Length: 294
Image (cartoon, rainbow, N blue to C red):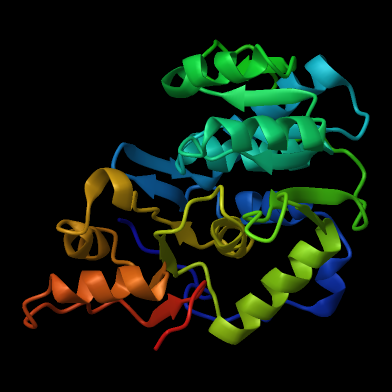
């Protein structure tokens, strides 16, 4: 992985309170312009720079606007936690919509409930999950967009919609363990406040490489994703369900991860796979949440 050589490469720049009075999309576009050739997303399938991720998000955003117009609406996402999901989250926000994640592993009944309750007007998926999406839409009729359809003809410029810090950003649903799942709404300002606090607490810079094990379809995963991308950091998601724990140490070394993030139980199982001789010279922070650490 290339390293930044400019004088600000390792300089922490505080996230100012005034910067919360914009949109998530605008903040990302600032980083995409500033760090155009810097890695934004790195997965086992390849690497996307900020320019490439922004272009991909713009093509999806313009396609969404063609399908739905500029009115506020909800857009459901049925995707794995990879480049397609990251680009789609940004695209929905760029198009002035609210995204509603549907994890591919969710039970069918829960996915149907979320689709119906959120009144999503569009469902974005890819060929990997197309059949699953089509089955859902037989019961909850909604427009469908497959990312593997040819979107190259769509415009790659920023849509340039006006900033509205009060506009909704996303809706995540509770587990429903105490009743029916409830949609928890976050607006742009709330998300940016979280990112501001996270940035300043962790002293995030463009030199950081974030290794999340949480799905982008989970609230913590989405916050981690935007916290990194709104600071020019690189995101290196690790799919523990597909890859298992055995190769996680190699992934942290390969990506030169500086921040590791998972629930405590996963971290304990990961630590148990180590022989005690491993060194992670770039790792500077281990973040755990979602359950008691002890």
